[in-house]
Image 1 (cartoon, rainbow, N blue to C red):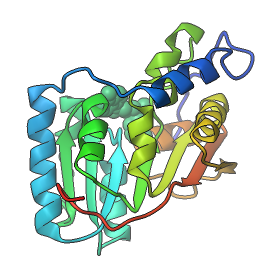
Image 2 (cartoon, rainbow, N blue to C red):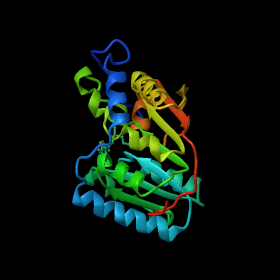
Image 3 (tube, rainbow, N blue to C red):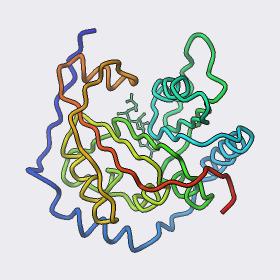
Image 4 (cartoon, protein in one colour):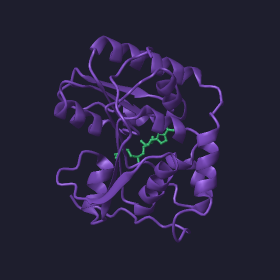
Length: 227
Ligand SMILES: C[S@@+](CC[C@H](N)C(=O)[O-])C[C@H]1O[C@@H](n2cnc3c(N)ncnc32)[C@H](O)[C@@H]1O
């Protein structure tokens, strides 16, 4: 596969100068914006699937067309894989051969879904955020997950959190935000021997270096609606 993905262009020359202030403010204050009805309903359906499965949870956030979720469902057959993306055209794109029985793909806004998952005491053993939108302009810091009010809920979910990106600075910032929340992440170059997402495949085919950030945020059994 040949591809020609544009390299990330940013007007930042390092970690955003407002990162610490922004993250500390969000860590200290719950995000109180009302949850949309649509995402509440989506969360309820995901909760029912998770509860019925009786299996530990793997969360695949920003799953796009769900290929990474499918790959995880095959790699971890004893887990319940929930893939979440806000794009209807992506999340409803079907693949040949049917879906794995341990997989649930759902359309939802993660700004709401993460909060509901935290409040519902979800405890994913693994949590993937693969190739999140980078929002590389300096003025868009708050659109990056570590600059968003919901960052505190992402951290509170716990588990083994893994992010991948073609923009190293995004992951450096995320690691800095995790440090402010009291967690250490490990940032390394990532060789995608067998790409599991369309963006991973595209960036690899374009010869772009890829990066991975992994952090162990603590673990507890997955439950739904319990404590
Ligand atoms: C760059 S794409 C990566 C998709 C996939 N992980 C991949 O690697 O092919 C980023 C994805 O994040 C999703 N996304 C961005 N903001 C979101 C939000 N607030 N809630 C849910 N999904 C979101 C987009 O719809 C998009 O599918």
